[in-house]
Length: 81
Image (cartoon, rainbow, N blue to C red; front, top):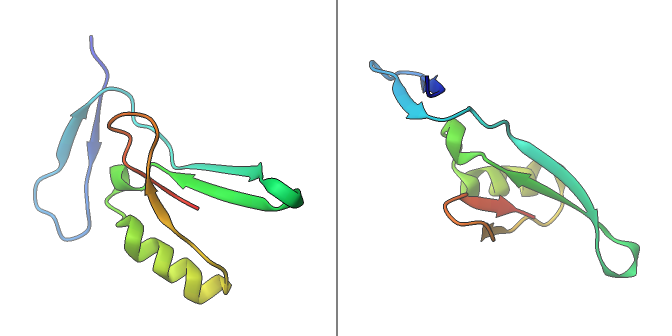
């Protein structure tokens, strides 16, 4: 059998069924030039989280910069730096 997962958003009557295994929200800390560390956030769209709104909330709450870029992998959504 093919794995299937169900996503239910608040206030939504019918759930969304998607093929494949449910991916987790991925957080990676990578090191950039001059020893700066950057946190990458991926797979927010799978859970109904708007990347641009999330990046704006991070900017306000954390007092840091946040940008949204499309993922290098095909059909993987966006990455927040």
